[in-house]
Length: 360
Figure 1 (cartoon, rainbow, N blue to C red):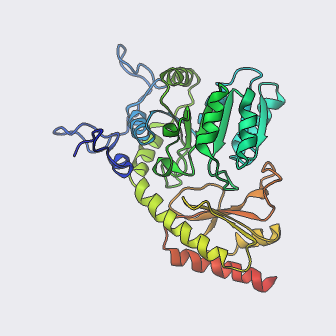
Figure 2: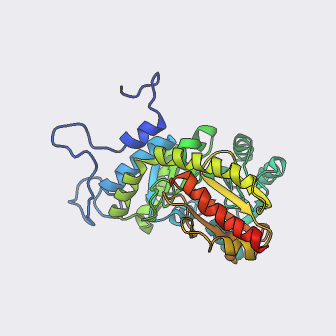
Figure 3: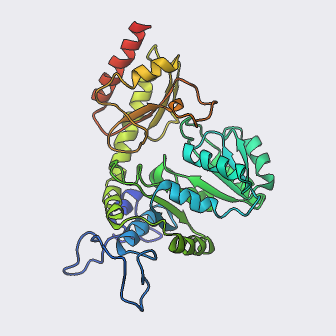
């Protein structure tokens, strides 16, 4: 049945069907990889920085999932910096103190150079966030946050930011459009590191921005055309192929995470288990950083790695990065739960934790 206002397609179906060639004889089922830097003049593309049919298919699919128009970038940070470039000289940006580390480092650098001012907030203190919005130009947040997994009052913060005349960016990397659609809640812009869940196989780097604001879209598109922070067509093709299984991957990984969070809460070693009740990210706090370092070296299935959102389970002690905020506990380990069998994941994790208990 085709989509209609009375019978909209579910996000799971959109992930599979959006961004396909037309259903006509001899059309390929999937958009092919277009390897071209130059096009015959007189059309819409002209040159490789301005567009590519393979990107366009990925952008159509992600835009349909988020409910807006999508622009693809060469990485999540390329997408993020393009959004920070919307902030005028000296304007204020509100951001959670616990956010993606690359964004915090970039904001600190921009503030140090006098480009903008930054106010960091505890995203769980809604009243404090609302107060900080008062003279802001941009309010930027994640829910849940990375790696603390704190949950924001998304509608209240968006409303407060708009009342103050600020734009709102929501990084939806952790939740994906299957679990949260910020544009429907009033956000101006949605950001994804497509390196993570959207592509889902730890084999590419890409970013994406989605908006319903045509003026913002035109500004971002124009700057991308000039600056050239565009994805490669092969990466775009891989990302689109990965997107087709997004619903299955998120469903399996989320079910695994919920069960692992329950079992971790009953284990004697972690002093805290942080799980927002949705999604596939968990953070646990161990008594000491040494124990956390031992944990991530004591498994065979779980891989000690800094990225997340792939089909495989990964974890790391976040404070091993010197730029991670000191308000993150030294012994915090962030777990990205994959789609392996949950019993295998638990057996591997449990034996490592049991070894710490014996060693302690």
